[in-house]
Length: 323
Image (cartoon, rainbow, N blue to C red):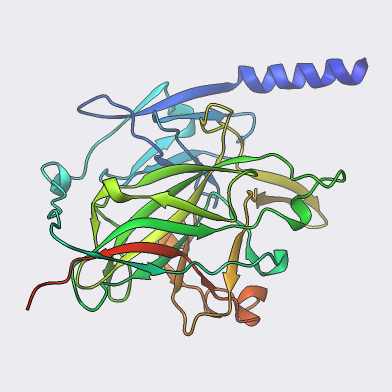
């Protein structure tokens, strides 16, 4: 009974010091969906699809500033003691009148498929966190106008994710699919391409197919990067859970903050020649993209074993020009 009362008092205390904060566009006053909130110490969180996130001085007592960012908006720094129920973000001046134009490809086309590469070896998988993003480049087929109609993301649900009763433990995770221009062979930080969110559960197929036809993604001559990012666990109605994104672990060197890993796992492969996968941790290294090789992490077991690529598949529509 004493333990229950203590836990109840603790939860009430944390809840009382928490507040839901809405990030809004300074002009339209609409919520800024999935904006990034960094705490300046390598940790952070995301707003949900309505621009809402939860901040607790009790949970984040070592945070003195919040760093907010979202594609198309100016970065914003807000003091933790100055956080209000609403935060307004201003669009980048050069994007206020920007319109993403994509020519509608018409006529006959041929479907081409790039096969996803999957496996079920838990030890050769990327452990997703909300701070990581993975990108793979796609190019035009035969130099002809090419549209991406579907993307296929291999996942792993088995191994340590199986309960003692032999059943898959339930989970519901929201991912975000994004597209980036190619600049100097790497993903561009800023992009006008639209994004799409998708929820994966333990009932999803081992290769998750996301239809992106409506996004009208035509691959430029220089190619395009398709990226996947974990946003967090969701409620039964597919809303992001406003939860702490890292765990605190007591070590001999003191309290250490470890980013929470999320299911499903992402199987990396050794069946692709060369290094073709880029990663970035949005709360580290100034959000810069890094090729997934030994320069990224010389101690990575994935890289050292040759499992250094993520095998995203795709269904492409190729519009061959008449001679």
